[in-house]
Length: 413
Ligand SMILES: C[S@@+](CC[C@H](N)C(=O)[O-])C[C@H]1O[C@@H](n2cnc3c(N)ncnc32)[C@H](O)[C@@H]1O
Image (cartoon, rainbow, N blue to C red):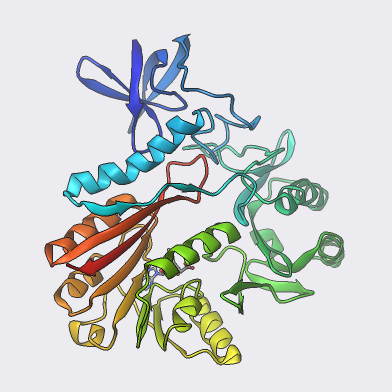
């Protein structure tokens, strides 16, 4: 088949239409003319490009040698304007779909390359030797990453060192994952594999030496501390909070800084008591607590403990409660204790909670989302209940991916 790419779909693939049938073709740009075959699989069909009779002028050269084989990036091939239009379009489409209008649109903010502070990689022995990297999209193939333009340089330089160490340690078909997090005091590295259950004396020496030589503040084996030179922390609004490789944290310091400044801007000037829902380790809780006593709700034990301990130690008026906010959202009565609410749910959004916020007397809501679709669905519920979406900010914290973060400010109209 031969077709022209019309647009980019929400998953980042180019869209071509032939005989009223849509085809989603990865790594293409609007204006490309492509020849492709449709390969029928047991469950799904996939498209395989066989030629490019015409390349679009909206393209640019990708920066990474692994682009198109690695599962880490989808959109390095678009020029900056086309890329930015696609990202903003993700939010516009979602809000339009639900008929939600924002009074103000702030500019798209893009976190640049080489800022990512956390990654998870897979490793395994193959015939070619020990491979470590991202998985090829939709497959079980590991890309042996020689470079990654997303991550901080201290993370990138660690990858060949981990490869070398693991290659020396494992001779057979062992496999596992590596989580790396750059913190204020150095790297936190977690190695996960069943082969680390009972390390030999030689492996213990190798791992300890590896940590010592590579600015690794702490090395974990299967999420248990193996050697700790410094307790890993990040700083939220002046307070150090314990963190852990492989656990949730926003993707970069830069994203934290940008979101905190936008949330500060979106918050009302005076807050007598605020509440932070889906608080994690407190990225936004410590900012909120600068305005007034703040309650935080979260379901993950490690995050709750880290946040409450940090707040107690710094004597910041924060109370953290463990709660499943999908099953047991704050009731209308409970919401009545607050004059400001901040919500930052996972991709699914906060449907049950938002339905109760809609019935409450709350006047001010700031909502951060990593999924424009669930954000728009929840925004519609708030707007139908008398809120207005005062302002939205699209934030691209996952460069070259199909993901977009949204920061929204709602107030009663
Ligand atoms: C997008 S993260 C935001 C965390 C935090 N606001 C931050 O910026 O670091 C979503 C958080 O919601 C928590 N979470 C997921 N499902 C939950 C649920 N059903 N109830 C409460 N918290 C949940 C996760 O553990 C995670 O910390």
